[in-house]
Amino acid sequence: MTDPIEDTVVLPDPSVLAGLDHWRTLPIKQQPSWPDAAAVARASAEIATLPPLVFAGEVDILRERLASAASGNAFVLQGGDCAETFAGATAEQIRNRVKTLLQMAVVLTYGASTPVIKMGRMAGQFAKPRSSGEETRGEVTLPAYRGDIVNGFDFTPESRTADPQRLVKAYHTSASTLNLVRAFTQGGFADLREVHSWNRGFARNPANARYELLARDIDRAIRFMEAAGADFDELKRVEFYTAHEGLLMDYERPMTRIDSRTGMPVNTSAHFLWIGERTRDLDGAHVDYFSRVRNPIGVKLGPSTTPDVMERLIDKLDPDREPGRLTFIARMGAGKVRDALPPLLDAIQSFDATPLWISDPMHGNGLTTPMGYKTRRFDDVVDEVKGFFEAHRVVGTHPGGIHIELTGDDVTECLGGSEQIDEATLATRYESLCDPRLNHMQSLELAFLVAEELAAAQQPAAR
Ligand code: PEP
Ligand code: CO
Image 1 (cartoon, rainbow, N blue to C red):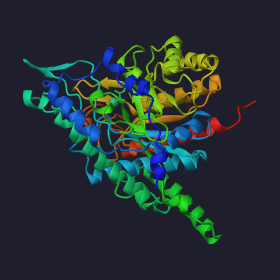
Image 2: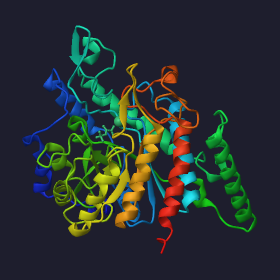
Image 3: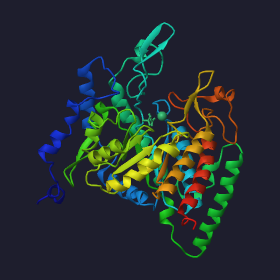
Image 4: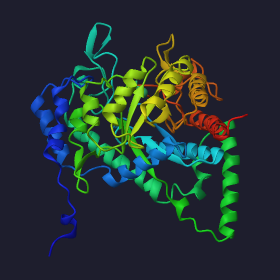
C-alpha cells in the first residue's frame, strides 16, 4: 500500500538546497572565533539531526497573522530577555515572563479591542552581537561575551573561549523552554478566566491596581457570556510564537529543514527571526540566508536607514511582496523617531510593499550611568513609542506592534516608571548580562500607555 504521507512529499529543487549555503561565500559579521573548526562542524551536524523546535505549519499561520497586523487588523506584542541565559531557563522565570506577556496582551486586547499576536523573545534568544569583539578590564583583554550559546559571562580565559558544545546546549535549553511555554499557553494557565491569577505575587502599585480593575471587567464579561450559554474554547488557549535574532549561523543553518509539503526551507529554531541592525548588510551573509527561508523575517532599522537601503532590503527579502513576510522593527531612539521614521513610511508607499512596522523603543535609548550601569529611561521608551504612533498617524500607515526587552521579575535595570527607580536603586537588583529590561511593573505600565495610543490610532482621523 502506498503511504499517503509519502505521496505528498515535495522534494526541494537542487538549486534551492545549494542556495541555502550561498551565505558561506559572503562577508559575515558578528560570528565568534571558534578555536576548533572541526568541533563546531560536529556540533552543527549533531543539531541538524535533532527534531525541529517549531513546525512549518505554525510558521505559515504566523505569516497570516502578521499579514493582518500589517493591514491594521491586529497588533504584535514581542517581548522577552535581551539575552536568555542557560541558568535563567527556570520554570519560575519562564512562567513570570509568559505571565507578564499575557497580562500585557490582555491590556492591549481589551484596551484597544484588537487581536494581539503574542511572541516571546524566548526559547532561542541566546546569541548577541557586540560593539567590540573584545573586552578589557584593567590589564586583561578577553573575547567579548557573545551570549550563552557561544561563551560564558565570567571574565576568565576559559569561560570566554567559544565552546561549540554550547550550540547543542542552546538547542536543548530552547526545547525545554518551549515545552514549558507550550504547556503554559495550551494547558489552562493562559485561560482568560485566570486573568486575575497572572497578577498575583507582585507589590501593589498603580499599574497593578489598574490591571485588577480591568481583570474584574473581563471576569464580569466572561460570566455574563457563560450565563448566556456561550462556549469558551477560544479563551482557554492562546497562540504564542517564538522569536530571536537570527545571528549565529552555526546554529541557524543546521536548524533549517525542508518543508515536505512545499519543498521549501524553513528555519525551525523559531517561528520568527529578525536580522539585527549590525548584520543587515545588503550583500552580507545574513540577508542572503534569510532571503531563502520561508519564516516571517524581521529587520531592525536604526535612524541612519535610507529609503534606498530599505527598498533594497524589501527587494531581497520580500521580492514577491508577500503579506506577512517582512517586518521592519524601527529602533530609532526617542529623540530621532519623529524625524527618521516618517520619510521611510512615506517612501514605502511608492515601493508597492506593505511590510509590518513594529517599534523597538529599547535599542535606540541606551545610556550608561556615572556608576557604570547600562540603563534606559522608562520615559524615553514611552516617548519613542508615542513618536512611532505619531509618525504613522502623520503618514497614514499602520503602527503594527511593539518589541520590548522585559522580564517578569522585579529587577531594577531601567530608570523611572511609577516605582521611580533611580540611579541609586539600579544596584539593588540588576541581573541582565546584556541590555537593561523593563521589569514586570514597567512592562504593565507600558502596556496601558500603548493600549491608549492604539485605541486612539483606531479612531477615524479627526476632521
Ligand atoms: C537586540 O535586539 O538585542 C539587538 C541587539 O538589537 P539591535 O540589532 O537593534 O541593536
Ligand atoms: Co538588547
